[in-house]
Image 1 (spheres, helix red, strand yellow):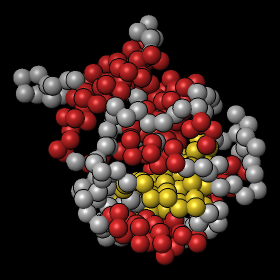
Image 2 (cartoon, helix red, strand yellow):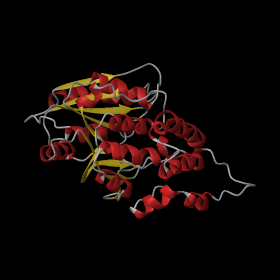
Image 3 (cartoon, rainbow, N blue to C red):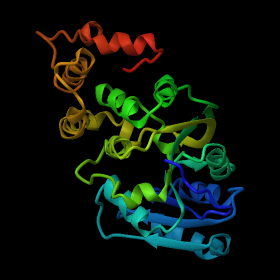
Image 4 (cartoon, rainbow, N blue to C red):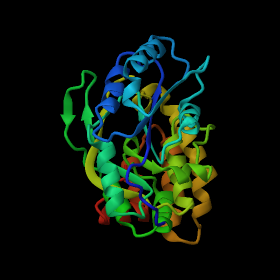
Length: 307
C-alpha cells in the first residue's frame, strides 16, 4: 500500500510499564536521546505497585519540553499487556507508532532509521528490525540477534504469502522492534485483550489479514533486556502459555489453513505437538515427532529453525 511520506511526521513513542521502577528511567532517557525531533511521549502504566508512576511523573515534568506532547496514563489495577498497549495506542496522535516495554531501550537512531526506511520504501507501513540483547545491568550480550525466521518471512513478496506461512508456523518476528503506520490502527487493529501472553501474534495476524506486508530493516533499533522476571521467559507460565497459544491457533490461524493442503495439514500437526501433546508413557519424543511434519522440512530447506 503506497503511503504519502511527510517531511516531518510526528512519531508517538508509547512506553508500557508495570512495576518497572528499576529500568524505566533508562527507557525514558532512550526516547529523549532520539535523533528524530518530532516525538510524542506516552507512558501507559498497568497498575504498578512500586515507584514506577511517580518516577515517570517526575521525569516527564523535567523533560516535557523535549516532546510535542506528553501523557501519563494510569489505572487502579493490573489489566494485562494487551489492554495496557491499547490504552497507550488509543491516546496517541502520531503519524507513526512505536511501542516499547519499560525495561527495554531504544537505540538513539531508532526512529530516524525507521523513517529513512519509509522514504526508501514508501509502501512500508509495518516494519520490523534487528535487536541487541542486554542483561539485567544493561551490559551487552549480543550486538545483533540473528533471526532466520524473520529474514525468510520478510522475503515473501505479499502479505497473503506471509499470512499463509505464519498460519503454518508463527515464526518469531522481533516484535519489540515493530514500527507501524497510524492507518493500521485506524482499521481497528488493536490487540485482542483476551490474550495476555501471545498478544503480539494476534497483532501480526490482523495486520497481514488487512494486507499490510511486514518489512524488515536490517539494522538494530531496540536493546532488548533479558532478565528472569520477563513474562516471555517465566517457567511458571508454561502451562498458561500453551493453553493461550493453542487458543490463538484455533481462533485466528485455522481460518487460513486447509486440511486438503499437505503443508497446511502440517500446521495442524505441529500446533497439536507444541501445545497439546503430553508424551507417551513418560517419553516425550517431541524432537523426533516434529520431523514427521512436511512443514518442518520445508522451513528447514529455507534456512529456518522454527522450534
